[in-house]
Length: 309
Image (cartoon, rainbow, N blue to C red; front, side):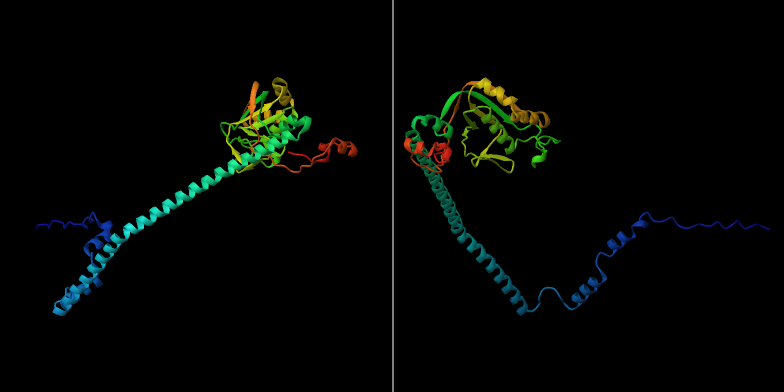
């Protein structure tokens, strides 16, 4: 009896390569949503699409003509108004330039008048200063001076972001390598105390009423900003003034800034330094006094606090 061969199972078919992409296949196979497809079929069955009646066609044509007319009218108005806008813009530019020129002229007039006032104040100071007119003019900054002195250059550190403890830590300043107004104040006061007869910073003459302040990171001298490096000129006995300043407390303070914050400094004795006159002088009080009046009161003019500055 013949034996039937065994039935071999064919097994499950191999999975499709894109079986894991069923969502993407579904999107590709059904690009149009069923609802949209049904609405499109219904509209086609009802004869939708372009209007078929004459009235509908005329209405569509009228709408297109109206839209074209609106676009054409807008373009024409834009072309007509373009020269007007350009003219108004040019008029505005001309007005700005005119006002700027007028402001510059007024500023020049102010500077000229200020110079005239300063010159008259200096002449009055020289005329009424008596025997000490030259000394008073020198101390008040009324006249330009030159003579032996020192040249001190102070500049920010190369890396102005260094930090650490130092002499400015308790003064409310951030410990960086930038020169501060407080530093400049101490340097100038140290030069005066060491025997300087006249001092200027970057060509700005200092007087007894000069103010050194800060506006942000900028240093102001009499409300005029200075740019580093700061060149300080002082009239006096050059070598003696240099030695006295470096040995003073303020000179040691500047040396500490150099050591701790990298602030760059250099000082040298000069045979001749030139300082300009102060740009303007402020007369606080003025009272003519004779020799008899001074003897009667037993006080000098400087003791009364009245005079010129």
